[in-house]
Image 1 (cartoon, rainbow, N blue to C red):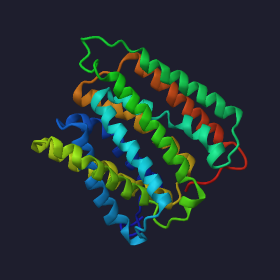
Image 2 (image 1 turned 135 degrees about the horizontal axis):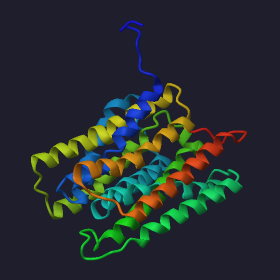
Image 3 (image 1 turned 180 degrees about the vertical axis):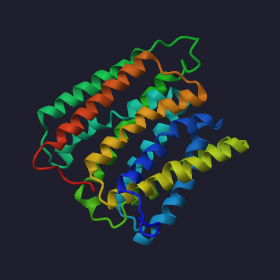
Length: 297
């Protein structure tokens, strides 16, 4: 094969995107800036990056796109706050309870049938979720005073993410020529909401903070989304993309442990294994169901 006709397999684009996503917890925690400043800077750069790569497909805003953009903004904002107030493992694992809300809401919004395997998955995820709130909160833990609020924010991020995913599969959204519309406007909404909070107490970023924000906005969100949609557009199945997506919650706390030394509790590890195991079970089980559900490719 010559250099001229060599192309990466589509699945490689999805894998790169997931690897970039998995570094979010590390760089959010690495900055000395507060959650509001991180959220503002990251989303401003992400919106610009997404616009550069997708504006040719149109950026027309309607009420449905605005609604999905709000859900997207809620997902990112709660996740950033959770990473600043609880452990990275708690933040990402609790966000991955999103399938609970997807399974519960899909029958009402998308008119999909709720199956026995869906119920099993919901119960498994709820069991895993409960373990995060068994963590001892004592003075020796530097996150003790805020860890409960951080866990709640992570759960809220999962709720927003679940709703966002459900509405992405709605027929109204499938009519959009630009699949990045909600990502673009969601990031703009974050910027608008964060501006007064940040200006109330202006940050004093160091060079390391600026570099971290640049990476988070341009690469961890913007470029990652471009890679992911490119892989899907070139033929990667939703099932394969979902399975590769499980790399994110597994690697996220590992990066933080390796570079920042943050250790998740045994309860968080056990709860995360249960949640991810339940989601993997449902994803694989769903692949054997016929006919397939509403496609999201």
